[in-house]
Length: 144
Image (cartoon, rainbow, N blue to C red; front, side, top):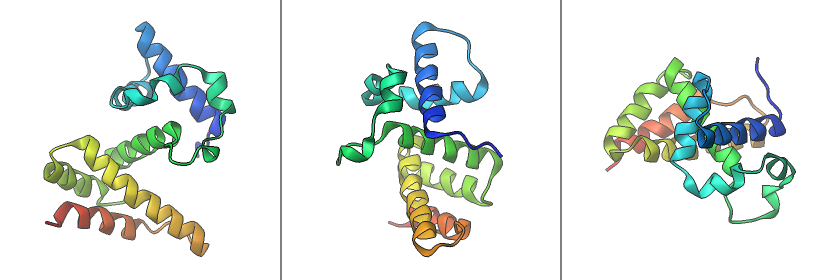
């Protein structure tokens, strides 16, 4: 199982941003990350300095989104959809995308569900509940 450290993730995303700026060739996962980075120009300054990114503590800046966590969640949801794991996530995100007319907005709604599932798992000391996660995304896709 691949378990990168916080520093690894931050260096990866900063490296992708640098490759995008320079036009350097990228691996498939880097290309996917670059697409999500392009959707978030407000994060480009954070991505431009890998050493500062590794050193920064986003917990100390309330009200500011951690760009590395946010982009990592985009990548996680993209990967989940590509392999349909947990089973049903692909269809739920596709339905949500159609309802919102935006894959990006659908990801943001799914992120709320993913974060809720992870928080509940940690709070209760139980494994993440994939069924609850799917149900949350499906509810968002079907509510009026």
